[in-house]
Structures are given as structure tokens and as C-alpha cells.
Image (tube, rainbow, N blue to C red; front, side, top):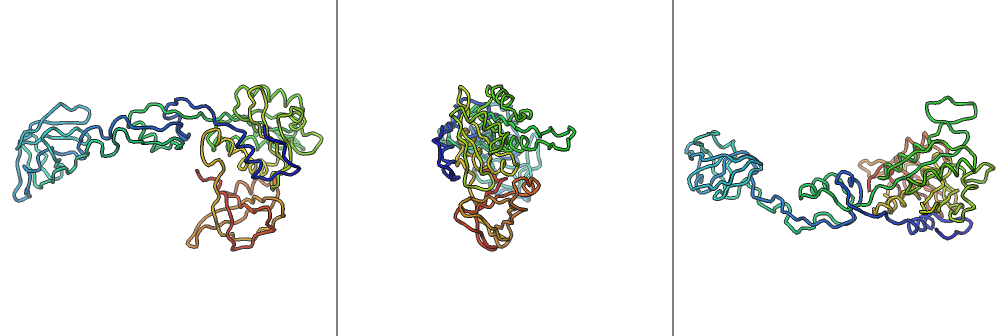
Amino acid sequence: MPEAPSDVTSVDELVSRIVSSVSPLADFPLPLMEAFGMAIAEDVVAEVALPSFDNSAMDGYAVRAADVAGATADAPVRLPVVGEISAGRAAHLALSPGTAVKIMTGAPVPAGADTVVPYEWTDRGVATVRIERGADAGANIRRAGEAVQAGDLVVEHGTVLGPRHLGLLASIGRATVRSRPRPRVVVISTGSELRDPGTPLGHDSIYDGNSYLLAAAARQAGATAYRVGIVPDDVRSFTEALSDQLVRADLVITSGGVSEGDYDVVKEALGGLGTVWFGKVAMQPGRPQGFGVVGEDEVPIFTLPGNPVSAYVSFETFVLPALRTMMGKSPASRPTRRARLTEPITSTPGKRQLVRAVHGADRGGAWVTPVGGHGSHMIGDLAASNALVVVPEESTGVSAGEMVQVLCLDEDF
């Protein structure tokens, strides 16, 4: 549980508290496909070489280079074909001088052969082959261990496993790797005015977009997300819903109910526990925040504002670092990129502005253009954005043409 901050907390201070309060999930062996996208929790050393034997890189004939030296179309070399070797069905053959063995790609090169002549240089003979071009010793042969040697460190601890890593791990015979599981994230939207998409709206109701927004953001971060049905503005209903969900939660996100209103049930329900801090953060949007732990297992909980832009920006700023810490991924927070601002931005000193924007690049380099206004309810502008411009707390604004720090929201890191 973080210490209670002062009246207004800086963004960096709260992020630091969150990351230091959240622990990586315990690691255990996972099947390769379940570990995809996760950080490996061990160093993997190859126990076999790749390739594990000398094999042919071409369909052709295994021969001795000395037997085909000087072969040309006008003066071909003819050799008897004494056998055939195909991948996965290879007999143990040894090649005598002055003979050839038909060989398929990936098949082991027979003892006595030191080169492979591709089909294209031959008449593809069965009993006897006509070879019209010689090959140097070693040509078209993949040597044992030339890709990976037994004992090589192939994947380092902390590496986020992508398709190429899984391909390598499978190729050296690993069926499982130690990794941390995907955090289970429960998303709860509060508000008596909320309705599920697809149902009729009343004159004073709105559709619940936040639970979809936040669950999708959690899934994009690598977590397993569970959306909970809408919880009305009632302390008992919220408390019961939260209690029911803790059994399957590694982390809980709520949206709404954390401001200063009469029906801010999240704050009312959790404020008396002594394990959840509620306060103001020096940022816009997303000023009201809450963070702490709940339940016997001390499950981390983030209570985010109800306005969609504020909720999403708060997720990027505070929840994402917690999830990445739980998964053992580094860095915890999304790195910034520098880009040229195309339009001016005004800012209030004392608050970090996170401005919706579109980021791109041209011959002049990376650029970023603000999208829409400052309203934290403008989810259409949020959907049109792919970046956030970070305006520092001490700034009163940024002029067009200046270089700014940008968070690229769809960037893998």
C-alpha cells in the first residue's frame, strides 16, 4: 500500500509508488503458445545443435567435389547413382569415390560426400546422372551447428517471446518455458445511467463504452480481461460485485465514482478500508485517481475516472506500468518519442497535459498533430488518435514547429 501523498500528487510520484507496490506474478512452465507475448523467466541454453547433422540445402546429388571438378555442358561427368536419401527417411549410407547419391533438401549428407550438385546442373538421371557443372567442396551443405551450437544461450531472461523466439525454442526441442502468466484483469463500470450496448436507451442513460475500452486496453497489454456487468450507483451493489470478482482477479480496474459527487460509490465503498488511496494527480485529463489493494490476497485496484478519455489516459499512465511489472516486462512505462508539433498547444502550469494526437512521419521526420479539444468526454477524438503529446507540468504551451515528447499508443515495446 503506498503512503498517502500530499494534496496533489505528481504523475511520476504516483507511477513510482504503483510500480514499487506491485510484484511480478510467480513464474512456472508454460507451453510455448501460451508463453507467446510474455516475458520469459529463465535463460534458455540449447541442448542440441542446429542443424544437428550435416544436411543438404538443395534437392540434387551428393558427390565428391573431386569427382565433378571441371564438369561442363560440353564435357559432362557421368556417375552411377547408388542410392537415394530423403529427409526423415534416411538410411545410413556411405558414398564410394566415383559415385553419386540422390538427395533431398534437409536429408543428411552421406559419409564420403563433401558437396551437393543441384538438380538444375544435371539431367536428373536415376541409374546414372549426367553432371554439367562442378561444385566446390562444402557447397550446398548445411553444416551441423552452423545456426546454433549446443551450449549457446539462445533466449535471455526477460525477453518478450515473439514468433521467431517460439520457432527457435521449438527447433531446439523445448516444449515449455518458464514464464509468468497473463494477469487476470477484472473491469467494473459503475453508474446507474449506464446501459449495455444493444439495449434501448432512456432519455437520461448512456451506453457503457468504458468497460470495453479498458478491457481491450488490458488485453492489448497482454493481460486476460474480464468485463463485469454494469454496477449501479449503490455501495452495497458495488461491494458485492467486487467481492464476487476478487477470486479471479490479479488486478481490478473500476471506472467512475471517484470524484466529489454525492453518488461516487467507489470512493465511498473503498475509502473506509484504509488500503486504497484517493486523491488528485497533477495531470489533465485524469486528475481524480485511486490506487491500493483489496481483499485477503491484497489484489491491486485502480479506480479510474468515469469520463472515457480520462479513463484511457489513466490506464496508459498508471495501469499499464503495473501490468507490465506483473508480467516481468521492461520498461514498465511506455517510452516517449520525439516529434515535430504541427499546431500549437496551450497548457495550464502545474499539470502534465496529455493531448490526443495523430503521429506520423515524412521526409522531414516524425510529426504529431493534436486532435480535438480538451474535453475528457470526447471519445470520438480519442478513437481518431494514435498518440498522446506530453506537455510538461511547468509549460504554459508549445508552439507549432517545436519538438515534443510523444507516446505512440499502438507501438509494441
